[in-house]
Amino acid sequence: MKTVSLPDLPYDYKALEPVISAETLRRHHDKHHLAYVNGTNAALEKLNKYQSEGGEIDIKAVLRDLSFNYNGHKLHDIFWKIMRPPQENNEPNDRLKSILAAEFASWESFMKEFSAAAVAVEGSGWAMLSKTADGLAINQVEKHNALCLAGSQAILVLDVWEHAYYLDYQNDRKTYVEKWWQVVNWEEVAKRLG
Ligand code: MN
Image 1 (cartoon, protein in one colour):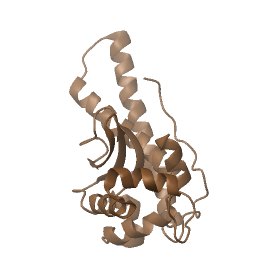
Image 2 (cartoon, rainbow, N blue to C red):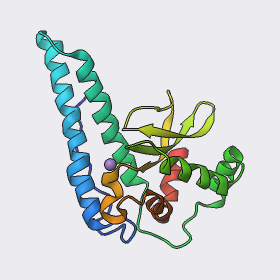
Image 3 (cartoon, rainbow, N blue to C red):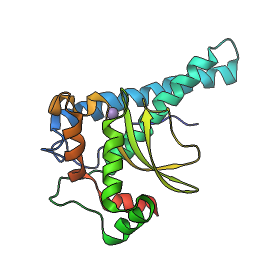
Image 4 (cartoon, rainbow, N blue to C red):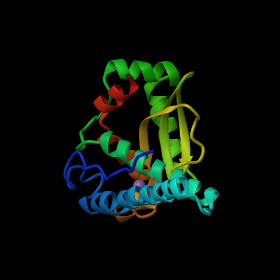
């Protein structure tokens, strides 16, 4: 695996206001995401040294760090891309709606299940729409890396770590999740779905 770097946001810090404040976005991208990039590279450096020079290493701890930080980096990279400035009545086009309806009974029941999953994540984590070999599924991710579905691709992700919403919504994760639908970039989601 190669070292990773912090991607630029695809919009400015104010772009998602009032749903997500500039201050939240700045800290989230510049501090938290950066920490996962640095954590990934630190783990990779230890592994590279171990591979080339040998010596002792706490392999379990290093691989755990790599999983946590690399997943943190990749999830945030997707998260920035699947958002855009808020829009009224922000909904996917008919084609995407019908794909979601075919898997989740209706477009409304997809929204309901995804929101419920996000609100109910235990501690820090994510709600995720995954494309598996057997169709679409909603799953919760604890931290950045537990409860993922093997072999699946993340299509739509929602960060429900407190750092994602606490400045704007305090402990009201439910309202954050409700408002967040206004900033989903459905064109990008459709693209990821293929
Ligand atoms: Mn985050």
